[in-house]
Image (cartoon, rainbow, N blue to C red):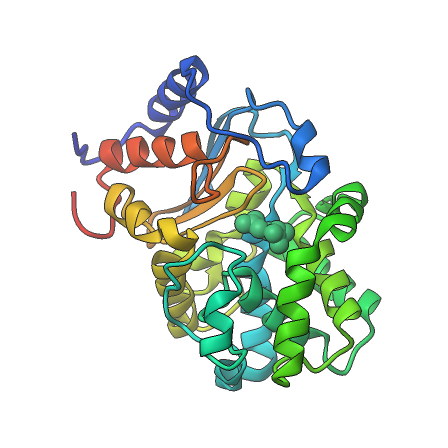
Length: 313
Ligand code: GLU
């Protein structure tokens, strides 16, 4: 039921208790071997409101692999770098296909549907890499995320990156295929190296919620007072998170939760309640579409209790 002034302390602790008690936890990703070692019983939730108040519970201070959530930050960087020219390399439409699908790429001449499917994110990474060395690019991405989270302790889990590099044959196929169409400019192994490493950024729910706050506040991080992007760009990134942020589960997420959101196969979801708060949830077990099973249910519960869905209470 909608509340006019939601008591977020109570809501967070109730959701954490409910989620911890559930037995249906989905399945932890195993195609990146290092992620298979994560305990599926973890559950963390953090909300940072636009005034900077933090409401958090469960494993909200345990770092996890943000994986595809990093694509929100690389998209932001790439737009900052080349602006609307980015749309020559990647589209803005939902794909309706799995996150690592290759079929659509052939029909669309190597230009991926959107920046959040793997092919699109690899193309975005390539744009950020152009004119720089991989190490320098990775440093730039990491420093940007640290700046957004206002926390220099955010780091890259090198074991996760190495694990994905060893087994990332599909992403290598996507990158090589795009290269054949001229969509990828740099050596494929350089672009993939940067991509695997930014996916391996490790963050806690509290750090991640802080890092997303600029998207709830018209592009300004209210914690630092610094402008990250224009209000128009923040609105557009939110629009893409809503339509494309959960792969072929994006419609279901909009239907059930009603917030712009981006998931990762590490089991995290970053959700944005514009003008209200930034929310990070983590539960490692995934559903069929590769999105956190309990993470989505927790967010559905949160918007139900707060009335925060962008589609109305
Ligand atoms: N690094 C993962 C991959 O490329 C990211 C996928 C995800 O988080 O959804 O497969």
